[in-house]
Length: 269
Image 1 (cartoon, rainbow, N blue to C red):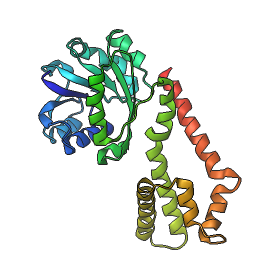
Image 2 (cartoon, rainbow, N blue to C red):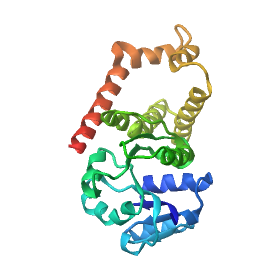
Image 3 (cartoon, rainbow, N blue to C red):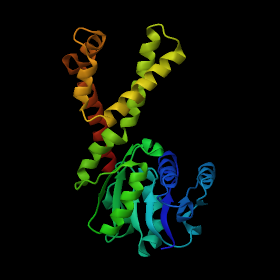
Image 4 (cartoon, rainbow, N blue to C red):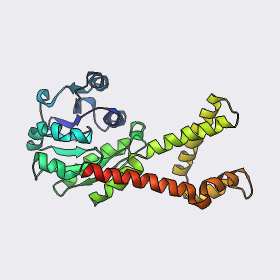
């Protein structure tokens, strides 16, 4: 192999993962090649010191990994151009939501080793959630390399059943957007109390950041942490009465995650 990773597509998610790899020293810039047809995105990737090409045709050498970070609807048009790398020994990795491993087997051959990963955007700051599954042709040694890459972006467990990936996508893949919207809503609620807009925004953002950090650092589960902050008859209890009464927030979140899961299944089909 002349390189470790050929990254196909370097939009927001691909770039976030690339930044994590380089910042953590898992791979050197010289071990990564990017293919990105968009000139501005290609220049952004090149600014990190990696080789950046507009198409597969100009990419020399071979790679341990060909990682597809392109939109699901583009796979049929994009993937076949990378058959020569697979023939040379590359393992295919996809981070496309809703795109099954069978898609790559159909496009590149039934003997293609394929790994499917569902990452999320906090991977850019090393706090991502990346869940992986693979087909029977992926070697154990390759898993070790991929584990190192995922660890640079956050936490990266493996699951044995690809059917579970729709639920993974609905929770952790889409989940950051839920939290960002929660910050938006908490900011608006803070402004409604009369707080200045900049103060309201800071309060909402830092409260979520701090609570998440505490949840990560504490040995207590979230329910215990919630109870620890809630004095009987106090202000927090009053607010939780609105959120938890009749399971309002749980019902809403369950419906939201299920809508995302169903859409993931539709995309896969």
